[in-house]
Length: 229
Image (cartoon, rainbow, N blue to C red):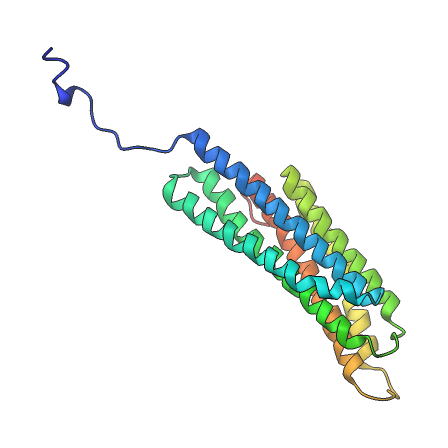
């Protein structure tokens, strides 16, 4: 009976969330980030349709889609912060969560640029297509391929695939330089300058979207290897 009453025999241990609970929350977080990535991919696709198929209904879908992306972004940030502060993660978990917080910022920025491209498409609609539109469309395809590759690397946690995204960026950078030179040196411009200025914005946005896709790939490699490239 005395042993039962000896409260000093068993030291007090504060409640610690189980590792299994932590891993379940982490898996849900990974799924949410991939769902956010799918929305960003869709927003990029719609902006492409708005610009190159002159599909204004696609442009009109982008603001609502961007709100959904922003909601995911805020949710992921809050969940990462909660896991960092409440679940006592180990070093590998810290690396994963910090990379997730940076990665979703890149995805959110791509979504913002896609929404901007939809607005530009509406402004360009009254003007006849510029002669460099086919080259810009190819640039957009390359940037979309980079985003798809980076998200695939994330889904598979494939470091080599993540690092390979950067190699695709050269084509986008070359397109940007060539198209900017074409627009900047064009002579005998007829009418207003607005379409030229808008196209310069388009290629700049596409170049930045490709950069953010590269960042996503590099963050995947960091998650897997622990080494920053």
